[in-house]
Amino acid sequence: MSESLIGGLVIFVLATYLGAALIGRVPPMLHTPLMSGANAISGITIVGSLLIAGAGLGWISTVLGFLAVVFAMINVVGGYAVTDRMLLMFKKEEKR
Image 1 (cartoon, rainbow, N blue to C red):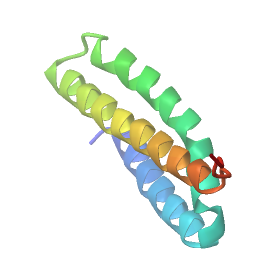
Image 2: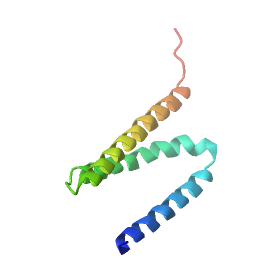
Image 3: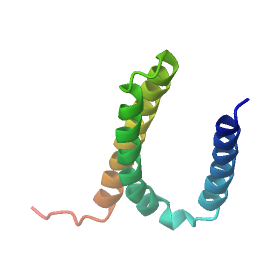
Image 4: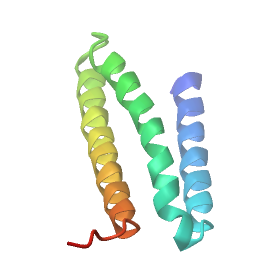
């Protein structure tokens, strides 16, 4: 295996572990605001995955880029839906 592949795998494993450790330590009260802010990061992921999917580097990068676009879009839409629902909980009801 090439050095860049091994380096990429090491970074992936470390990022996965670090992400799980950080999310596990966030208090439940902060999960929704944290996810709301993470939607911006998923937007960056969408742009990057679109670039990879359309770069013409081979069918594997096209398929993985497409899957990254799909999963990032699910994350963005779900995050905004959860944030919208949370904000509705704090909205005062109008009296008629």
